[in-house]
Image (tube, rainbow, N blue to C red; front, top):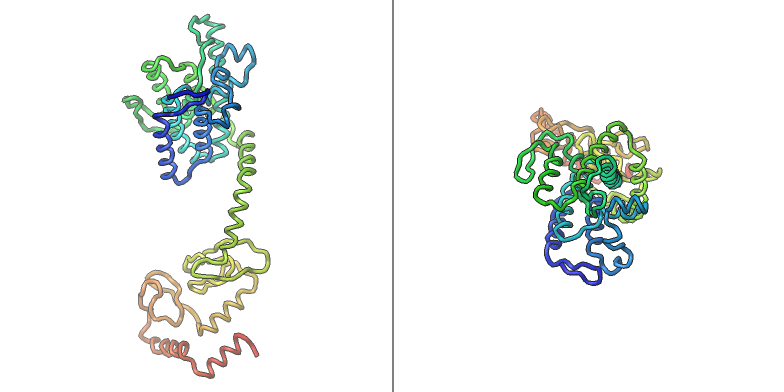
Length: 381
């Protein structure tokens, strides 16, 4: 790691982090946007590119220090310290953990609720850590410098996420080589990390665990959406509106083509676009047609006069009815001897095969009188 004018230039682990993130998002079907935003925000704050270097506070201005926060009522330290990291390994370890937890939680909760949860956990974990540090000083006169220590990093929020993710799990998991119940993994990791890496913030990690427990209790007592979640949903909807508008604008130009080919330009009545599924053969038809393109079954619930169109189409085709295949239940044309889908022969075919063949010959090789009759029925006059 090098430093130039306050900006960091990675020489090692960050390309590996980028490769892992791209690989996980490529494999994921949901591609959660809030998790991606958090990964990008933490990484950009750490790298401090030129366009952000003069905007972002320096590391010395955002260290989480309980004494300075209480003395100066410094909200900048209170909130921003969670998004700063002091080295490649610190950032990469936290972001790998965020990637794994964020993909699961955001996919199951939804982006709006996940964003609300992250905002709540940042405030709760920092607040609990501050209260713990102050309490140790006031009630126990503890000499260790918890109240005066400096800490940064997203790990407090990650401990809270681990508690929430494993709260209902009955599985077992590995924590640094030990097999323990998943719901107690955060507590085991708290102790083991402190043993192997003494310089980490024990109080910050403990505050994260307690924040996760508190969040679950508050969430359990309030079944509805909290105001912050509602606000996040409205903000997300507002930000997504331009993209949805552009997407729908391009999709609306392609909706005239659906299923097997072009089906038309529009339908009077101001009906919305969208496919409908035939109740007989399950084929997905365009909203612009009222008769199934596959089996000619009339659309269910259609009241705009398509029954006459359907009857005329059947009359033009010489169809006096249909028969249902005994093997696959597909409704076939009266003119067919075998099922159009599975090839099963029509039940009772021996008695009516000759009549059907005659109808087929008349349909495909009509006489001049038959052609004249069809033309009059279709176009009038």
